[in-house]
Length: 280
Figure 1 (cartoon, rainbow, N blue to C red):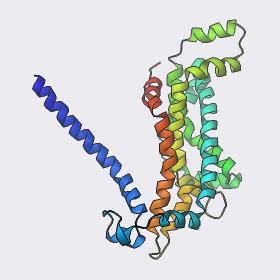
Figure 2: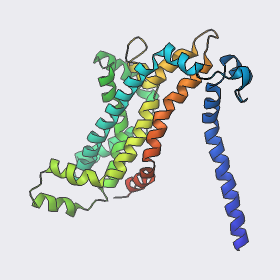
Figure 3: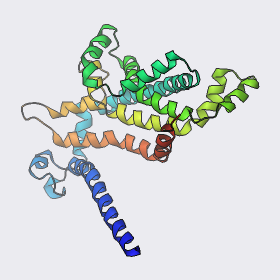
Figure 4: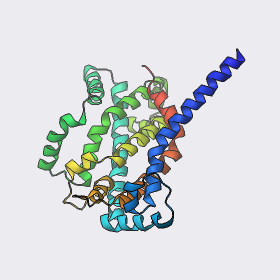
């Protein structure tokens, strides 16, 4: 019996190792080719960069110069941080309200938020881009509002699931002690929501930071507010003028901040997801 269990565990470990290799292979491939001369990336994509193939940091400097990478990095940071903060504040308060106030309106709002999670972006992207252009929202502040709309569904769903697990008696005791609803939310509810807040922040940060289609449709290519995924497309060129070396280098630079952020907060992900899945 013990031997059979060891054999099962051995095969499980083999499968898990294979999955790890499968998921990390593309990242390793990008890092490997970011230090390789662009002429050798197509002909020898899986070889180790050495000798005349090794480009040192040339690809990184060329990519930064061609795309104004740090300018795009600033706008990506502004849009991502601003959007995540607005999403956290608005959706946490919304989820708390619709969970505690039982009415037909709040039930309708909750199911509308849940329904928005299953609507494909391609279904609304034309009307969304047209509307943002009419309302002059093709700028970083407008992007924050747009991301709030698209990120509200999942965020409200996760917050609402966690709020249902918080005893109402805690809030009632705070109200009896003279605490206002707003003060109670920020001093009592928000600290309890910390695992879910961090989980929602991680999920939205990873999505917004890496998003290409929404900034491309809303802001476009003719403005100065281009984000990292948009400027990286410049390196694809046309008619064969593709700089794959600089492209790989900028992809490495783009994923470093999000990996650091994820590693710092990863311990809260499972806790927040499980807490947000509590059935009320």
